[in-house]
Length: 339
View 1 (cartoon, rainbow, N blue to C red):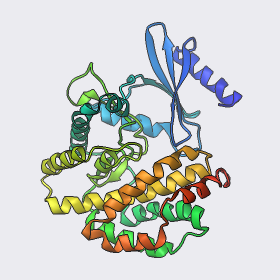
View 2 (spheres, rainbow, N blue to C red):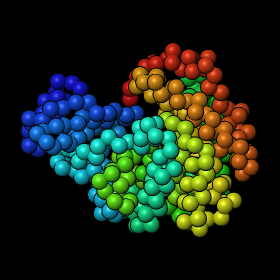
View 3 (cartoon, one colour):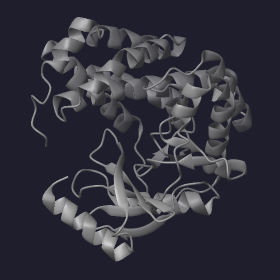
């Protein structure tokens, strides 16, 4: 945080009545946002620092948080805001992050993941906020081309046949995963979900990192939850939660499995590119350690019989993340200027 940013943060907290609070770093993520936990007497809160012009507008967070809370879901209350400078003072939902809880007690995984899926079903049954981005199949395919633009390019020095890739993925998504839209939160996974013991029902699942919410397919956030780039979900948990979700929406099994695989492939492809870019541009090589898991998820999705053509295109265009390939990417860390 620069000196100017510190001054702006201190002024915001003074105005919000939290100027005397002690502050400690709470979290950062793949974006430029960061979080601090504030403690003032017996109260706590969270400061979100989202520098303007870096892609995330705190107005979006506040808007989606209000929508989620109106549905009875546990998004943080926005206690104070300075949208122009990119600061929010948020309700502190605690430390019960799903990933941490499952690491400490693996037997809790099924119950936590069932609860998270129930939240999705409730969320998707309600009308979405107006005027959200609503990308089509071609937009999703172009987003997945990050796999060529950053991941492949860092290893092989070129982006390959981008047009072939985008065309093939577009056709696959149109055929398998381009139906009626619902609100999706996009980064719905175990490090953005908290368990709130003092609440009941669906409100026991705390929600974070939803400011990029948009319209999408019902299974997209389910893929994000169950094909987590950061942790391995037990196969039996994935199978059982998928079955519960599918039956609740009355989707035929064959259709659901194809849609789930197509969305999983799109998401894995995009993440490969994002993780490479985080190293090359943002100087965050730690994300490269996650690439082999994402690659494995991609291959599992591409093995679906409905994705044979896409599997052939990906096999032709994308190199495997061998140790040598990952070293090559890491050797270019910060080689590209921040846009």
